[in-house]
Image (cartoon, rainbow, N blue to C red; front, side):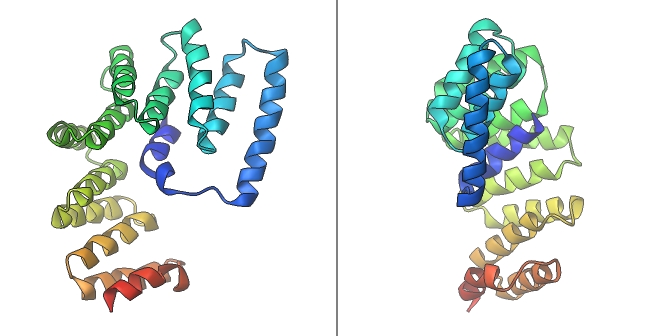
Length: 222
């Protein structure tokens, strides 16, 4: 479940490089061959679906989750991941049904609530999305992931000052996570806070991020 949250927030923005893609496809080939011998193995199907998901093969992943859920409708992992896959396929209604059913099985589950909040944002149900995020943060005030997710929502809606605050809190909770600092630098540039953004970029370099990888940010400050 925790790994799935990372997919929801990050996977759509990340590419798979050629080397990792080749490795994933080799692993997928092995998993597919093993399924021929153990077609009813839930664990093996979840593994294959996870590989399909990492390769952004949404329909193939969905087929595996459908297979599992046809036989075990309350399989938590399959429900969670199928909801995410349906979201990627823009089948928002089906994604919502999976998240909501999952929450009847595990009421209050943070990952499922976060997934539903992010779905609401994508489905332009902005008030519902923000209400859910605020409630989640009240319930889990020490989870940097939630502040970062709310910051992403606020940035998308051009609420840059609010996003800056949330990225700052996330950074305080996870000071070694460079992603929070990158996000804060971005919204500071969007607000015209070039001096503050420059400070963030210099801090990122001290944390090991190369100047070349931050070049686009530096160009935006000029």
